[in-house]
Length: 120
Length: 215
Image (cartoon, rainbow over all chains, first blue to last red; front, side, top):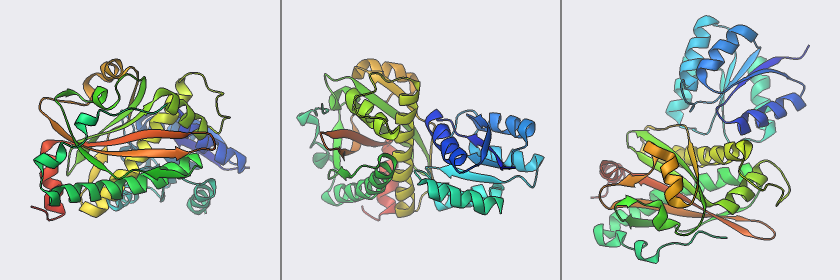
């Protein structure tokens, strides 16, 4: 059975792009969330194997969502996908519980490598 | 179509600042825009060129009409916070915005007639990625922590577009400094021009100059 993924990004464009990349590689995108709050709710409902998480989002940002999800499930596997590649922010996300970080824009191969690493 | 600029507002920066400060700001903009251009190139699969950054003094009030008079625009605004505060604005004439959205959505040129939800989302993401790359480069160069708000998008004639942005609309009570870079997306049949504006708050300039050790 293929691994399941929840894609969280406030931009429908980016959710579509990430979902397409993952679906074409054989992953099952079980849900999409457009802010951190939705991601936390959908994580509890869907229990995906992996979450891809943007950082800058309205209502609740990605780093706060990572903290809440890992509090609910310390084994959660979350891959940050953000246009903000500042070292301090990357470290903050990893400290919050994210497993890896890719900076947008990305080539499909870069996302898939990171996904494989996080799921390994 | 390209966005016309008000020639009167383009060179006033030199009268307010020492050449060392202007040099510093241009270098800051160059580093930011260089990274942003690389990001935009990856996003669109197109070669991107950038202009030499311009440091402009913009009159009080809504400044976008000064930069883009008489054309319909798409503006993607983000608020910058952290060690320095201000705004970033990615500005395109609407037809250029449509062409950019088509590129991002991997559609054929001319197949998108209007800026629907998906096209607007693509342009917001372009603004987000440009600003993210720009500020990531700046944060490393200036050794500062910088954050961005989610993007707000507005369309229409410049005055109308700004009204749509509401509280997010870039405006100032006194003349403000604006660091501007022009992007050119090279396509087989046309060049698309877009502007990226870094609009630091007044206090942010002092922080920038301290960071680059320019008096």
